[in-house]
Image 1: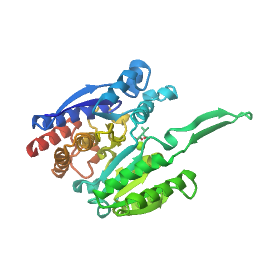
Image 2: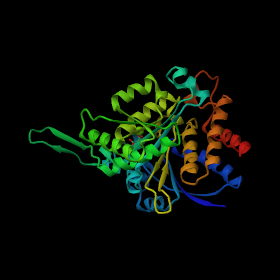
Image 3: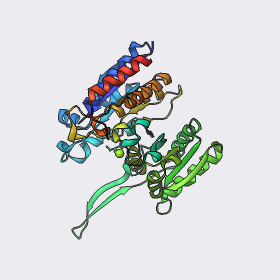
Length: 368
Ligand code: IPM
Ligand code: MG
């Protein structure tokens, strides 16, 4: 039986609560004899800062580099609002993405039928929704230099962030999006702001070239990022795969998450370049944050975190059937009417984080 080393980074806030539920689901998969998982735990974000004054230690970076996959929950919280910028909780997350070369962030937005009521949009707009946002994750304004605040002679300050993309960065993320579309409904919507940004102009040009050269069989459309934000809430089912830069992808994936009922539902995968054996560095994390307001109460929704483990099975370990079964277990549990507080909607009551984890693990046990 194959054995995989998973580096767990529970992080801050609700992180430790939701990662505990992943271990239950992983145990069902290994009890079924499909694979063995060795979990190693580290610190990232505020918890790492409290332990050693850094957003992630060098030792934990080395463990992340060596792991078959990293599973991270969430970082940040008001407790660390005033720590120095370089060691703020988010710096740990960004360093992992950058140093592991995780340029391709896959953020599926799937509306489970049982949750159509929980969305802020009308049922007919979101029921059956299945879109994939492919967000560039190691470039753009997140990492561009200069990035600074300087003092001006007149006593004012000047802040600069730099939005920068090179051809190869756009080529490789476009290729991921087109490959993805071929396995889905064969349509890619590429989004930028070429009407005001040079980086948008290059983005559009390069995506068009990649399409023409290697993916002419896939339907390609270009949409300005503001218009795409509007279309996402007007008629989201028009989209299949959306490919966009780091910042627009950040915003648009939060918008897309509300279509599915709750931010607590969305998993994500961040993948690096394939090596000679086809193996990619990978990190899996829910799209939601550390939700400090509900941390420690045992009411957080573990579905995005469990779904992220499912994505690890799919994209890192080749356990496609098990990944499908995890998605089905989530869908079944929702269809039975079980809800955490964030997706309660009209339901009479809600269940705890650990009860939701147990229910999904049990549903999986029956199916696997
Ligand atoms: C996300 C988050 C992060 C981002 C934050 C925590 C730095 O919002 O993963 O979407 O902006 O990328
Ligand atoms: Mg975000």
